[in-house]
Image (cartoon, rainbow, N blue to C red; front, top):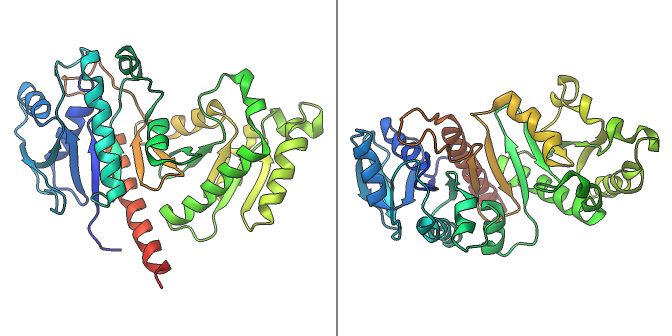
Length: 336
């Protein structure tokens, strides 16, 4: 798996730390080919304000990106109206959306092997009159897929979610046999395709305390989760559970697992972020493209200070490159 990988990296919210995290990649040589999808003038202005000596080179599809220290390849996108660090401007929102569109379309066309996204500010995009609930939903729409799965990962742990940003009172109703089936199939398939795991082992959390305690603490496990998992096992998917979430995240279980499937956002992600915040990566499964992202927000208070931690970005790039290589290998194996 030595083919060169080219990843698009969107710089995110211009007022946040995304642009300087991108610029910081020039500090040392890179293994993966990175193309920054952003306003070249924005990057140049931020570099000058921070005293960074970075050569920004225009990139064209078909070219190999710069990987030398001090050099960055840029696919410039117009429309950034202001670039002051820490100062949000709704006028930049259409530009931010355009960077995501350019990167995604580049992945779909084959110009890029995957995309990595720096953080955006959902609030200011909506203030500009653009309905936007997040990267995941935007990519789902532009790629035309019915279901995507959010998974966060560190080197030691992967946690995927059946439901994501829902009020807790709505979670139970959202865990249907159809949703659980679709999410589990996507998780199993993408662990194979993007991570090279031949037969993934997936731990499934119950919804209720003690996984329902035999129905005494809730019947979702008995009526929904257990029958659905039994059906999926008949398809050859290796599933253990439903397990009580308070004991699932222990070495006894995790040492033999490739991923955990949690029922809701705050059931699985607090454990993962405690274990590896700042070096975790957000991955969108179910897409026809590789997409990874940082595990943090725009950090407006740190923008322009040079104090932002680039650990999560480096992880997102490394994981994105690995996923792209695994997919290339899988595609080669499947060719007649």
